[in-house]
Image (cartoon, rainbow over all chains, first blue to last red; front, side, top):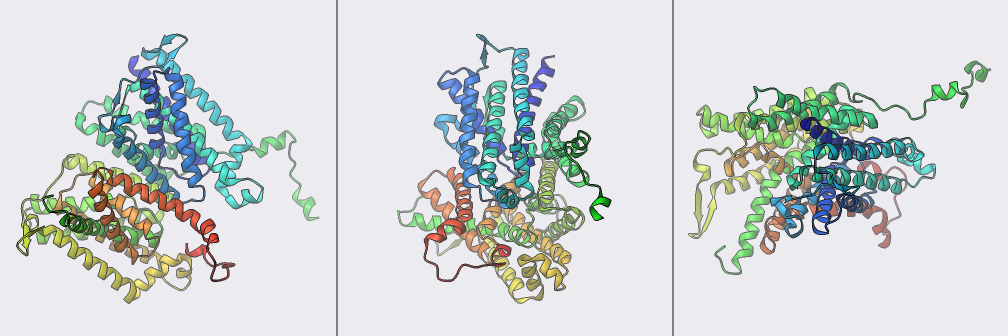
Length: 311
Length: 308
């Protein structure tokens, strides 16, 4: 039971990560390889405020998310005019810079020794130190984040983001400030990644810069590709599916333990390749927000009869 | 560091040039592929390491002489690059798909090497390359460093010759400039891309062999090499001739950084510079030039955009 609940918390953290990256990569169409970095900022921010300022972890997590958001805002604003391959490179550089900074700024982050002793949150006067209550907390946070992101995806803001992906110039012509749209999407995504980082820090109570390397960012991208770019439920499904791989191979006994890590990563790579190759739209492809057939049934839109038009 | 104050910068400069030539070797191959096909071939680093491993297997496990093993390893590297392009990348529809696919490929290759050879460094046995030579009775230089420098300059010159003086180089440059236009004038862009992948991977394999001869390779070392190849390809922004120069510049810069600051900051500074450069460059054209007096009338119409 403990095992299942631990697994559940990790699934939830991965789901938040995947959904938040989907805002940037799925909706705005900009591939960011910096998500692990934002997660690290959130995790370290949370840990620092929880340990040094002795804050309740719930608030520390929000502060950590805000710190990640500020980093995301600076980056998002600075790179607003960068798109395509160059944005991938810029986000990659940011990822490296963030992780290197965390590794070197030893007075705050304890550098490569890692930071330990991160507490569990206190809720209603009780510390959630057992797995059950913490899992419940994480599930609630995930549901809140998921609801927020889903709502956002179906709002006009979400539509505008997809518009930026399809054609930035058209959105500009429609009077949207695409620069700020992109920046806001990036800020929200980095805040959510920060929350995921805070949850992870509280869950394992020990964080190390290597936990948030570029590999993490790539794995989150793999979640999205498996699930379906641009589809929030797909992102969640992809995260659950890919995270199950290590559990399944760990359950079989015949693989020596020192090969588990590499084998797991081989399978991640294989999943990435197979989905790009065979099913680029993912398991749950993105569907149009506006369901024209249903709108027509309800009489919200009418489609002119072609014969009448030609006549 | 046992020299007086004046020799330290010279030593650092020499170190920087060597560092730069190592970066440049990997960078030239990567940039050639990137500029021609516009695809971020992320598996380049892993393939580079793999050719180092091939050399290791041939010389250590199959007991071939080093000089026999090297061409085979190089050929294997070039062939691997060509096969990846011909049978995998070519069928993908977008640059993004290629990037993600090559991410996957790199992860798989790296971890397969990990499973096959273990995570530790694999080094060649003592040989001619690992020795040192003495110049002017007081400067000790490792043979492999001299070889690296020589190979780097050779690759640089051959690449320039190929691109500037040969027909195929003309075709490659045409595809770099504008792929669909080259196709229209009768260049078989598919073949050019295949050629570029083969040549780029060959240069990458050379970098891989240099790496294993110098420090040994481990499954993840291709990643580190590739990072700098990446930065250099980016800094040169589409001009092949600038790649070696930026590599040397970056090497010297990082070496001089190590003079005043802790060595661990190298990576941080290199990426910070890259990030700042990207941001500045993206804003440059739009804002900062407006502050400067213009010499010519602003370009109108179709110029500029396509060549970016």
